[in-house]
Image (cartoon, rainbow, N blue to C red; front, side):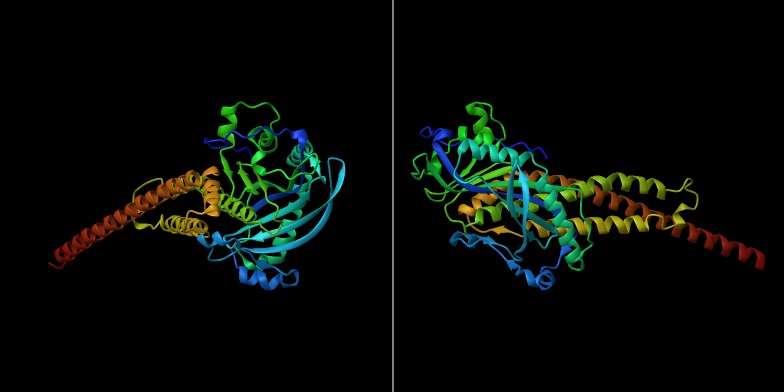
Length: 389
């Protein structure tokens, strides 16, 4: 899916480091997220997948206390598989993260060539971005996983909408002599071919607009976010908090996209059902409860959509402005979370107004029917009185 970045400020001017002078050790994590149902019972999933040692994972940094996650997702290892990428056979580690609001995130960790040049790392990213083998691999694991936990899913159904994201992770960055290089040396000119998948020489203004989300907590780490992917430089292999935050934000984005599309499809159906429910003639139409089934369905649609969107947005709350919280807020801004939510609210408002209109019409019809009944009773009494005499 093509996505446009939001405008913002680029990184400050840094000493020039050429791509040929850098050596990289790292890998990439390919994410493919799916909506598989209305809700997933995580406690039951833990029981079903107990043999694979599933665990409830949340960020572990000290500042992660500013992030409240009432129902942490479940992470489970699905195994390793060999794939061919760019002519090389690689062993890919596959895992999944299961969210209670109906999303499963499949992840494939793909090793990059050992101690490659920065050009080689960019080539690796380009091959990965254009390859179908990883998405196909994750699609297969999704079907298998959903079959195993189907009894834990409320209203199971795999939606057409998916969310794809790649995180390039660098564990070691050195120069040609093996001397460690600080990640701050990765200026926009170096990272733009990797993150924007564009090897052309971009203007300073373009890079400033397309690469505005750049974060560092220490001198040894760096996180750069874009709409399609991210670069994380961190010597600690166990610190995956930034990836967790980005995955969570993508899961929330997927749900907002899914319900926006669901409501888009519901509006035309709603108008068609209204027309079908209206009788050809209004004569005696007020005696029927022609809108009752439609009103019940509209009420259910509004209730389900509102409940799930609220649950998605409350799945992770930020209580303080710290490093991880800023990354999370920037990810939501980058993914246009507010725009998707505004679209959903607008469509729900249309459905509510339609419900109110139909309900008023039905109530009016009932009042009309009652008035007619009263008039008929009065006429009947008059006729009976006349015939008695």
